[in-house]
Length: 464
Ligand SMILES: [Cu+2]
Image 1 (cartoon, helix red, strand yellow):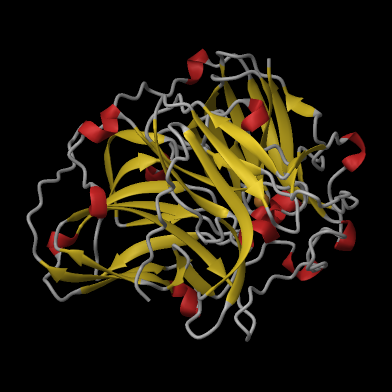
Image 2 (cartoon, helix red, strand yellow):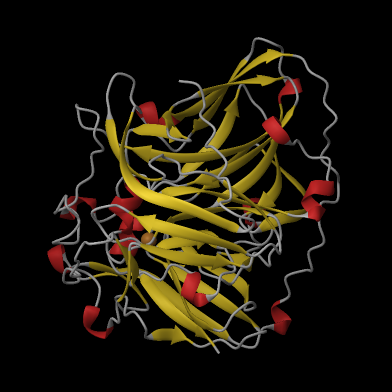
C-alpha cells in the first residue's frame, strides 16, 4: 500500500474550522471494508496545519452513536476546551445516560452535555510542535480511538520555518498505530459491550492493554513511500493504544532528532534507535542520500514479534537537489534546573485489586473526576516524581515538562526537550520538572496506555 498523507483541513473562515465525527466504511486491509469512526469519516482525521498565536476555533459535530470529548494532546488549552472526559458532545436528537463506572468512581461526577456540536478554542500560544487530537470520553477512550478518532495538529511558527529543515512534501507526519481485524475486515477489539453505550470495560485478559497484529502508518498497513535520496523530516507519533515500538532503519540508518513532543530541541540528537511509547512524538530528520538509488529502507520495530516487527518501508527511487540542512543550533532551551521548583510531588502508577475488581490507579486511587490530587500555583515549576509497576506512558495535560532523571541517573538521550508524555518503565522512577503556565483551572494527568486510562489510571490537578 502507498503511504497515505491525511488531507489538510480547510478553514470555514479565518481561524475557524468545522469537523464532523461520523461513521464511514473504508478500505484498510485490501479487499475488505472496515467501519471507522472518524473525524470527517477518515482515519487518521484531517491534519490541522496551524500557526503559533493564531487563535483557532474548531467546531466538532458529533454524528456518532456515542458521546465524544476531543482532546488536543500537547495543546496549551483553556480548561473548558481541553476535552475533559465528562464534558461530552452527544449527536443531535440522541439521548444518553452514562453507564455506571466499571473502574472509575462516578459518585463525584458532574457530567456536561452539548447537543450536536461544540466549539473548542485553541489560542496556540505555544511553540511549533507536532500535536495530535483524539477522543477522550470517560471510560471509553480506548475503543473510540481504536475505531479511528485521532488526527494530527501541526503548530508552526517563524522560528521553525526559518530553519533549513526539509519542508513541503519532505515533511511527513507519520501516525503509527496497531490494530487487529476480524475476518470480515472490521476492527477487532475486546469490549464487553460493542455498542459502547451500556457497559464499560474489556475482557479481563486484556487488563494490560490491547495490541493488534497489523501495524498501520497513517491508516495503511505496512505502507511504502517513495523518496528521493535527500533529507526528510519524519514527525513520528505513536497513536497506539498500548504498544511501544523500538524503531530502527534497516539497512542501518540514523535518526537525527530535531524536536520532541512539545517543540524543537536546543540541538540535534542522533539516534540509531528510539523507543516511542503511546502518545509520544519524535521529530526526526533522515538523510536518504546515505543510500543508493534502488535501496529499500525498512523502518522496523525491534520490540515487535512476527508481523509487528515491520512498520513501513521507504523506497529510494531518485536523486534530487537538496537545499535542506540540520543546523547545530535549533532553538533556545533554558537548562532544566530543579533548584527553581517550589514543590516535589510523587505520583505512583500501579495496579490494585484482583480479577474483575482490579483497576489501574494513581497514588492508590481510581480516577475521581473533579477531585484534584495536586494544586500547583500558576507560574511556578514543580518536580513530579513518577513511579510505576509496569510500562506506563504518563501524560500531563496543559503543562509541559523536562525530564530531570530516570532511575536515579541522567535522562536518556530520547528524553531531551520539552515533553508532555514520558515513558515510565516497570519499577522505574522518572523525575520531571513541570512548568505551570497558560491557564488556571482543572486539568488531568493519566497513563496513555488507553486501556489503563479507561481502567481509572487518571488524576486531576488544579492550577490555582
Ligand atoms: Cu499505564
